[in-house]
Image (cartoon, rainbow, N blue to C red; front, side, top):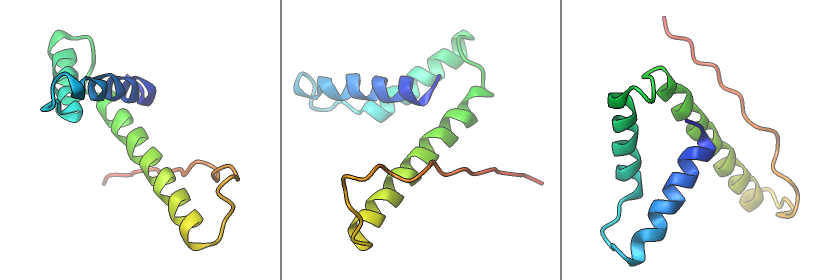
Length: 90
């Protein structure tokens, strides 16, 4: 399971909205993740890495958007380097 896999899954599900207006791609992703856990296709230890990757990607995207909106940055410039976050639990 990777960010690319999750994004592709969400895009495929969202594409079904015309056929089923009640489609909820995020709910469908969560159901798929639980099925993968139940079947042994995925391990619980994989979920934190996926969640962190999604979270950091969203932070990067929001930071770049904020920078473009508020600093007069050229929107054509590439985004800054990826954020890095290390969580330590005591």
